[in-house]
Length: 425
Image 1 (cartoon, rainbow, N blue to C red):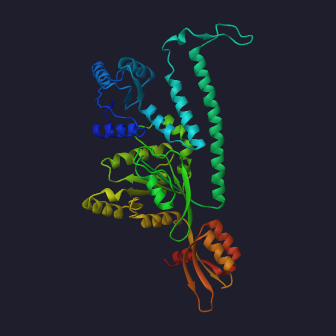
Image 2: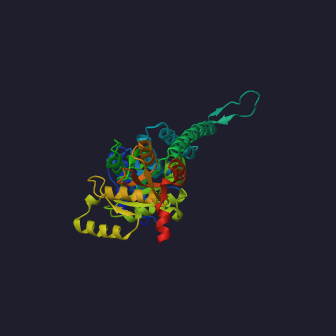
């Protein structure tokens, strides 16, 4: 395995590459870190290292070599000839993982589309394609098209069909979002570096059986479940594919539909593996991809930093992390595995969602069970009090649209405590 020098340590880059290979059940015969001062146009790495790796490949009888970087089509072809083995670069390896993980129709379409776009760039005139030609059609004359041109045309036709099918899926997901908006349930999306524990956290909050393994890209297809917050408010929790460093932009574009729930989310949970030695670098990678999706500093107040895997920290470091989260607004230390900090997380989500809503007090007749049920269903009931005459006072948080309906429904029995508090100040 070869890797360019980056801001991260060579050891961590190598470890991550091994993790990617293990995610598709490959057996690791060996690994090698190559420091690059300048990439070679023909082979990426120098001829000395090419020959050294060729010897290792022959000795271990390896039939697949993974290069933890981006290879041009020519570089890939030249290395395959030099090593007499199949060569996959980082993009190709991630695509292989995506192909294994996809289950839903949308996921399968996205995988195939990304793979075809990648494969189209890999078509090179390698051997008999130059000599093989197909004749013209109908009244068209000329020598016809080469096999290479035919392959490209067929791939492009398939890409166009997939884009149309994926557009239909995206439209359907949009209709689903519109349906939820009419309910409405706010959307809370989980994002984070791959293997940060998002699916474990999703399962802990929803009790759903989403695949949660110690593997990179264990989750590809989006999963969504409704959950209730401490005061009864319902939200839709959305799990997403994990992010990773150096994820090529074409892959981000191909999987944009999967990440649309993040773009549209009311609250974003940025899940971090706080026990990982390079947790800060991973967080920076996630922030970079969020910026590419149009989620920048202007939406920072919509993001909650969830420092996960607290159970894997030594006691002294865990204590330090707790002090750090206490000083940071919108940050919480949790363990999705043990349940530590999850109650605090639910409260933080509720606070984020409720900060733009006003609090009202509704005074209801004891027989108005239907009115009470409406307020519990459409709002977030914060408190309940029984008056001496039997009437019930509900303190409830409501959005502007629901408050208008409530004002009409309950006449003048509804008062805005937020506005009263502002007047008192």
